[in-house]
Image (cartoon, rainbow, N blue to C red; front, top):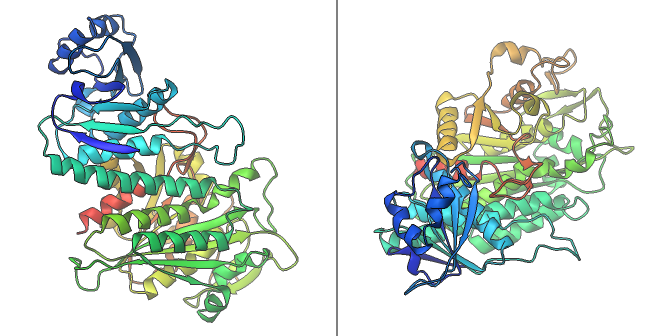
Length: 498
């Protein structure tokens, strides 16, 4: 797709259609709408008065008109963005994506969008990212009825903006949007195609393309490092586990001496539950259990392209959890990398077992701040649904930073408590700790306090994305399926850390 930035009159863009943000309850007399109302023969006035579009986020109304003068487009799409006082930069991507998906259905190949938001680089970045992510579909393996309608050109219009700022924003928006779709594509892959070895291969290919260093630890190396917790999960699978390590080092670092941010992800490429077998109904969704790892890979891809001035390491534990004669049993005891012993009481609480060694490894590599992400618990879906990601951590400043970045990027994070009293509930009679807490009590928190046992001195935050990593329904700006949640927020954390 071709992307352009326009700083002048957006009606003069060489495109098939125009799209403009419309606020809730807006009057057609608004300055930005007057010229367009005249161009369309008063259709904006009649459309708003009839409340065909009320301006709520996701509302659209398509107007057709005869081009005049220098105007090339023959269609105008009004795109609702909600109350003007609540319109933030994160809403630009949603509106642009909504316009892109709607116009694509109308066989439009090119359009220009006026976000009606002051700025330059960030406006272009969000608009382009929104258009790119709007084009993702689940139909990769279809041979018939494939959605082959696509856009060829998108123009983002910011009147009076600096052309170089728009160019930079387009480049950054492309990097972020394509990285989000990279994550979504990984999460959407069938488990017979995306097993740990394939996930590692794709990580290595991606790293080479964007200038990251990539190392893949095999089971022999992990065994030598003492990763008994992680390796216990892969025992029942014919697919060997992999620990994927990505490193970004800036040409000139602005980080404080010794500071290293680590992003750690759960990459269970398929989760049967192991010996503690899951019910068959809904098990197909367990291909998404590597979404945390995919999020790390997508974020690191964007980092490699955006080139921030701080070093970042990405660690993904890629494992398949299957039941066979070698699989871990409830009541087995294993030893993790940091020497702690773990009583495995439920083999379906496997994500925390692989993250235990992954976060310990990240800290061993020098990480001073660790953010892990995982589709860890069904309990977080019960607590928060699909609107907020659960967040917990040992450092309130880091937790607050992630929450603030989420608000700026339109992603919700909701903090749950951690305390010594919760930690006591995973003490084992036979080993140091057990991998589950009391039945039916604080399941999300139990997963977090378990992972916390493997963080020594680093500042740490845990993101439980089980409810937000995929969507069961289509949204005006996005297909159903994997969402790529948290990538934009994590990139904002990196940006603020420079």
